[in-house]
Length: 443
Image (cartoon, rainbow, N blue to C red; front, side):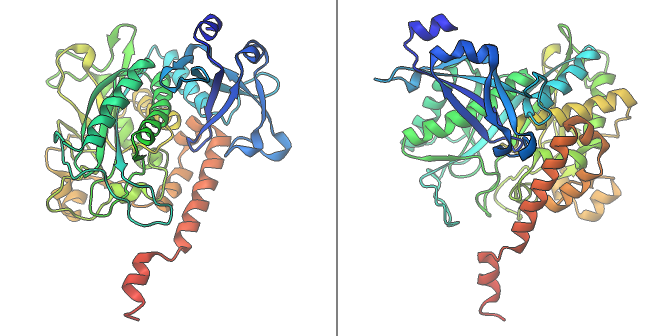
């Protein structure tokens, strides 16, 4: 790595990590300082980072992970190329920080490894390309009028996807598919499956890269779950699988759906604990506008708001896709949005699935109906419970979850709830344009 820095004239190395909410943080070091950073890390004030530490316990250390080193060739120029590495956050005594989202996921993966499992994830990341990014709350303008899978002739969107995919592949992030999504300006790029920690790192890199490439083409990219009332929102449908060595633990050739007992128990865990982890996979006030949108007669919203599973059923919260090869056996969770903290989201999804395996949860019958088209009474009769309908309900359910508290750890669990309660209280007190438009003249 040090030789690469010298040979390619790399002048800056960015050390990346995220706060508890999933916001990317960065500090740049010169190559000459990197050896010392590997030995001692980079000290910083943890109390200034969301959820990391209180003032009286603020000293923390960012320790670079050399396995994540990657050159960013597209950021070259007269100043030389740049590179990045993700960091693990340590306490001054060298022990892992309880507040580091990467450590939360590592801990969950270690628990799976103790049972002989490796956890793989494959995200389908949706987002909007916009002509502008207004900060005053006014409506943004999508870059095109395209729809699902349309071959848009709008030069910006077409060039953007090509440039974004090429940029990702140049830094070693494999892209499986890219296409236009349902709403105007909405895009989807699917990353190839990898172990969950690598995928979470890739998602953080992806979000940074997409925004940078968008700016370079004169537009803005947003991962806001629901920018438009009358259009579908942006999700991050995520495919999950467990492997035991080289064998896919979800596959059973003798089962009609080719789904093993381990796979069934994993899905049951996802369903039993779905309401508990929703505040993590859908952590913003706006996230619930995507899960519970206004009815769109001419648009498919695919909002997975009800706790059920199905084979090939895209209206279900958890879907079992059709697959050919045994190693392709997987389940798809459709509730997470692309603005989640991927480290925490993958940790709670894995924790819920493992709980189902450990406790031998029984999988209920799959949903064969279009769950969106059913009435509330019909859904209730079939036992399809609703996900929390807003952030307040989600954090209330999460606050009573022993599973989520155990997976996140006490520090992250407590901070996350405090932060989200504050966000809800601020939102609850805000007088909106909707209220002024509806009531000012009427009342």
